[in-house]
Image 1 (cartoon, rainbow, N blue to C red):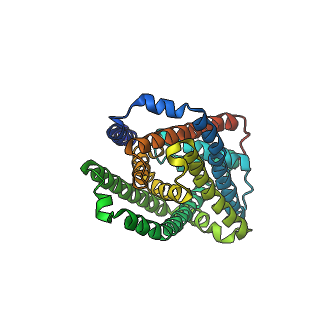
Image 2: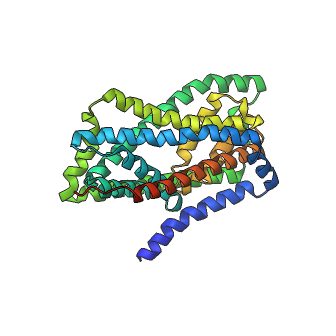
Image 3: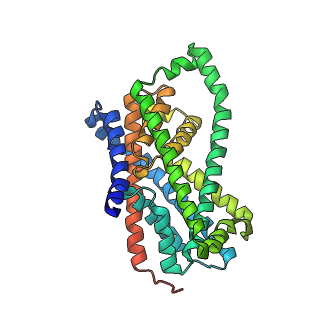
Length: 327
């Protein structure tokens, strides 16, 4: 039964990702994608965006260490960084496996109680959700005047804009929304499972509440802003890779970034498929031709995923030379 469950857990996300990717790219000229990805301009700007993909995880590790300090743990920053690199790398193969893995790594190498780590990660995710909610609110409020001016100047209505969706596009949107809901329900069930383990509940709760006792709330806020600013810049700088996105501006990038954040909640490897669909859709609404938006999504997602994989491999090497601290 476990084999069946594991096969379903790994296989279903891959099938979903493959189906959406096939639908999106079935008529694309792959020679055009290769040409776009291998251009000097694309390579230069993608390389310029990569450091922000790294700093986002470094800030996340620094914030995590700050959260663990009130609990009496002085954890090595290098271990936390490598555990996060490894967690994102492992999630490429098994979606949502990273959170458990990074807790296991820190328990092994730093001797921190696993339930405490799990509680701190849950709290971290709540904070990330709050940041996404804030970004979403700012994006919606700032783009209302832009949308109204756009519709006034072009004579387009919201109905006309939505009519650019195909029936399959609506179907993909509904499927992705249902998968996000299913993932949320699964995570809630897992949280209830942790809460039923009475002997570990106290440590789990301490981990969740540790954020209120951080030594420097200001640094906690700075790290949180640094995480999401890095994520955004990692994405926005990539807009300079192509002529058709270079002049769209930071607000268009913010809209696509926020929509992409929701798309990656669908349990596929690094959001593959839903993320491509979401970003392409946003770019289309800003006037980018559909096939060009698809090319942008494919090139950027592929190269950013490659970075995640390389950082995961790096962490394996680094951890193999790290001396474990016994509990």
